[in-house]
Length: 129
Length: 129
Image (cartoon, rainbow over all chains, first blue to last red; front, side, top):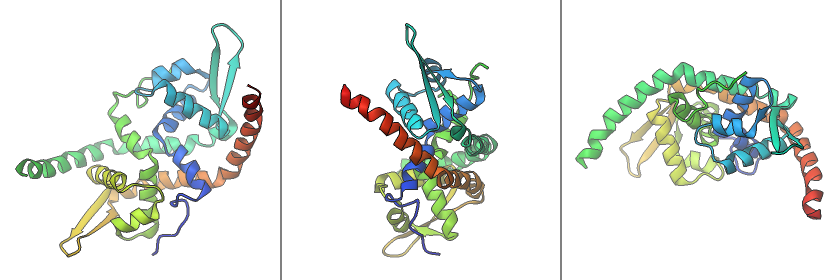
């Protein structure tokens, strides 16, 4: 079967959305907002997600807000308090992203075994070069 | 509810796997291999996926091969011919990734409406600054 042009092509509008949804930071942020089931502060998200920079977290949250998936609520207090929660549209992403996360946990051992076999197979070739 | 340390933390082994799976290139490559249902050549993948560099495609395919999700077959012909297909483990990813892709198509219009509202709401503020 030929490869149909479609979401794979850079020109498809759905491709830009898929690029943002199929993203580790999006998956982690929506996972946390789902799991906690309450509005979460920026600083909490930052602490919970290992390795995310302040800039990347800010940008990802802004994209998710613009896409209508996350609601941003700023409270006029000092110091400023900003909380994020899932919108009804954002909650429709819970199931597919949870399935991805469940796959990761279910197949972790298979993947590890494959990695060990691959590394055992390829390392000696690299050493003998 | 408190945020449980787990897959969100950088230290969790499942996190490294989720980072690779929740990735636009992985989603697109596995989508193409699923849809075609036959081994696909490197050059076909490169053509089908808009915007992917040769280096990124090579690295992503190598990671997927190491993870045991993709099988690489090199034929000893001139010019060299290399084909990629899904392993049985890789096929278990079809359903969760297809669900993500289906979500994208189902909610594209909602997201577009939200983006338009967001841009309409935020642009005047930026202009008046």
